[in-house]
Length: 160
Image 1: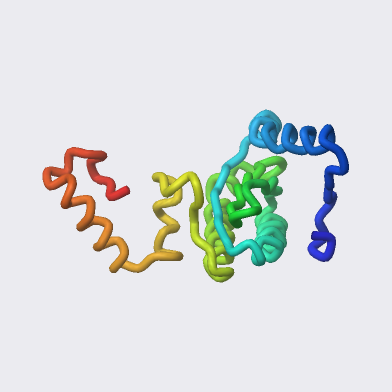
Image 2: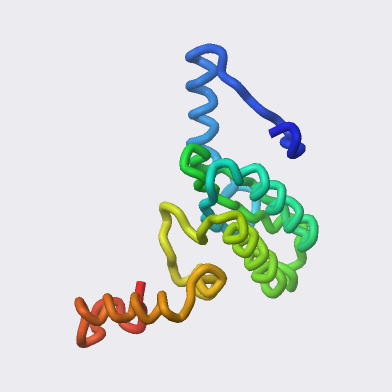
């Protein structure tokens, strides 16, 4: 972690310290939400690639002018990327942020990862799916949906 310029590494030496670290982890999302406009993305890479992913996310943030708070489930390579608007202009937030997110997802895939872990693909991530998946994948998914929804009445217009 230190070789990738991590600001602080905490270890628990006692049960009380362990409990405090878990408490901090549980309130992380609430803390992010209370301090700035933010956008959360969900990535997964092989565990050994987490340091490279975090380093790349931080570099992307510097390039586009946003900060990030990254946390998640390191044991399975799942990283929640909370992008913080902070001092980023409204125009950059509304128009350039997508380019930064695309770069984060491209890095994630290049490291052997995928675009979503536990949260699945929602409407927001849908536009980034071609970074990882081909038209063959989409055709297969549409076919599976059609088996269960021949009339297109379940979640109309959507394959996920």
